[in-house]
Image (cartoon, rainbow, N blue to C red; front, side, top):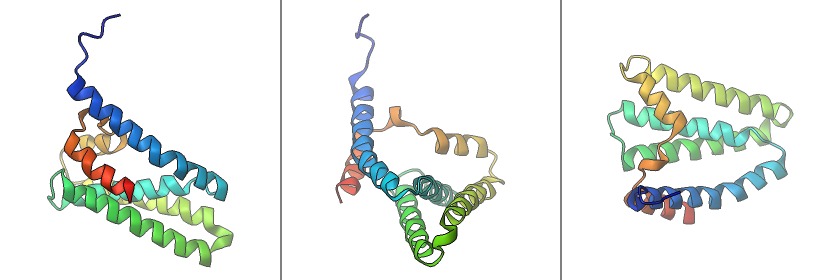
Length: 146
């Protein structure tokens, strides 16, 4: 097997992105499992996805502004779910599931009029880790370090 065809400028940022995700998501996953609320992370991720779609719909492009929209949406969603955790403890899983469904539905409604909606949703669901660059990683690294 030859490694001659591999391009380090593409693979190294992708590898670092994977390591950043691993460094943050393992402790997060442990905390989620310790609390026994396994769908909380999925709901917050879906809310962040809604933030991405809203940012793109507002014409913010695909850079820092859209990442900020995703971050703000995720923080807002996490805070809101935290409030509901205290006030509606008996139906907490139902609230989390409803938040997931509402965020997914909201994202679909936002892109409904976009002729490229399929591509937008596909990119949102699949991610593009191979096409990440060092500039994007710097920002994510700073956010993850905080």
